Image 1 (cartoon, rainbow, N blue to C red):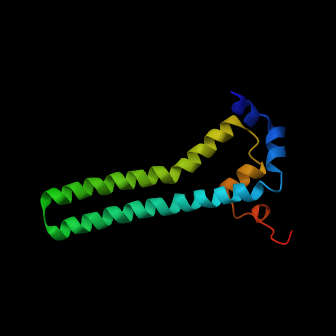
Image 2: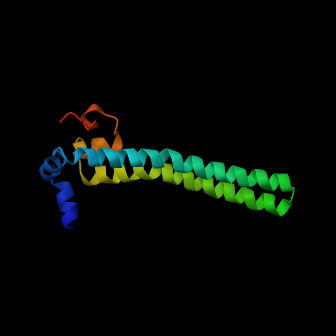
Image 3: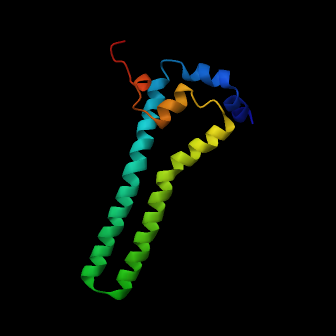
Length: 121
C-alpha cells in the first residue's frame, strides 16, 4: 500500500526521478526493455519457422502439425511479450496521472536528449 501511495505522490516521484545518478539507471532499463521488446518476438518466430522448415523437409504429417502449433504458440507469445511494456505503462498511467516524470520518459523513450548520459561531467 505504501508503494501505491508513493506512486500517487507526484512530488516524491519527481524528486526521486530528478536525481542525476538515477537517470542513467532508468535509461538503461528503457534500453533493455526496448531490446527485449524487439529481439524476443523475432527470436521466437525464427525458432518456430526453423522447426516448421525441419518438419516440412522430413515430410512427416505429425511433425508438420506439431511444428505448426508450436509456431502459432511462439507467435502469440511474441506478440504478448511485445505488448507487455505498453500494458504496464498504461497501468502506471492509471495509478499516477503525472506521466511527465523523467523516470517514465527515460524508460518509455530512452533515446531522448534528457536521458543521454553526459560523460564529460
